[in-house]
Image (cartoon, rainbow, N blue to C red; front, side, top):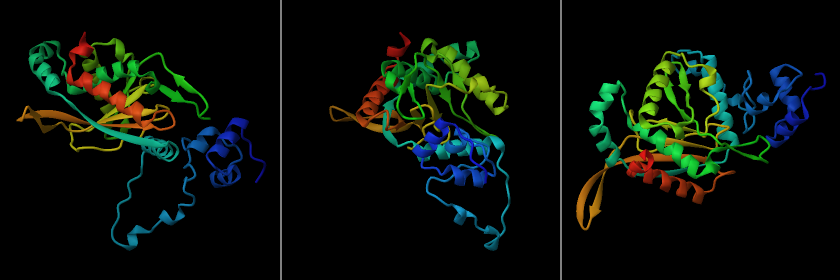
Length: 294
């Protein structure tokens, strides 16, 4: 094959990721290599971090009937990005939970007003508001690491991504400037973005530039999971179904609704103590939402 055409930054990226540019170009059948080919965001599959995966290519039909279901281009791009993130980011997940008694009380009290406004004020709106304020209090989480790992870019804005499960794949529309918006506006935007994501009417400009993403499985179930960090963000917050936990007040049992929370973070930027302090602040806001309403 002819000499490979690749910029110095692309060659440096290849060295950092231990990728053989010559072998990659041969596999892709071309002589020009771009950064996205190295990270797995290009139009062809990225080289597997663990080496050759040809042994995965199995004729499953020899064991029984199979049905072929082509992956959409959208799903293929998402899969490559997730695989690259999982392979390249040293991620850790911190598990916690928060008392949602006060939030559920407020939602009941405000239900008539929500109905009059035409807004469904879900618990997710409180989580977005709490996360936005916690990111302001802990700016290291509101940042991105440059591809060479040498510079941390701290953001002076707070945009919260909301992962939406749709028939055509996972979409992550973003609520802009969430730290400057009230619960009613956040609730309305969540409903609007989720509805348009389901209808595939979300524009590219509504899906990029997030500070941090929330992935919420509370409406489905589960007690905990380990969400994959959504690069170039450095952390992601997972939420599962609220459960009733027995708390003790001076020897008297009391049922308390607690929401399980899972914070995955890039350990190159955030350490365990940072994550614990971040979640202590966050769970405090969820337990007493008056602190984020005022």
